[in-house]
Length: 140
Image (cartoon, rainbow, N blue to C red):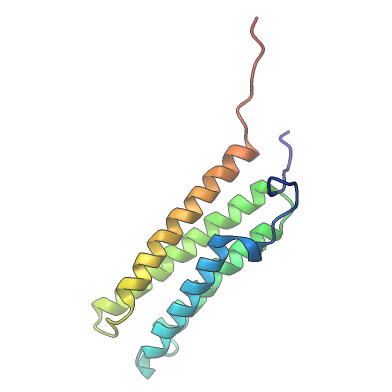
């Protein structure tokens, strides 16, 4: 059985999700996505705009929920869910652009989403390394 470890600063103090740069960036992205959703036509208020808002909210929410769990393994799992929500948001933005519903702010949002995706992946890999350290075997 592998130990459950909490993410801590070098000084041993647990880190709040509010202190994580990845969460801050996800909040910025959600704010930008809401602005794009507001710019969509009224005909998309309960369709694409609503889906964009849900996906956008899910990313920082999953980061926060995962960080609030008791194990590194659970945090990594919630980061994977956040990555899925991020992919949904990117897809919805691309669809809005393809449908000609909005072009402004899509490119900056997609660049931010790409950067956030790399941050999430990097953090998840780091957590996986810490949750599942290589087992060392004594030399015989």
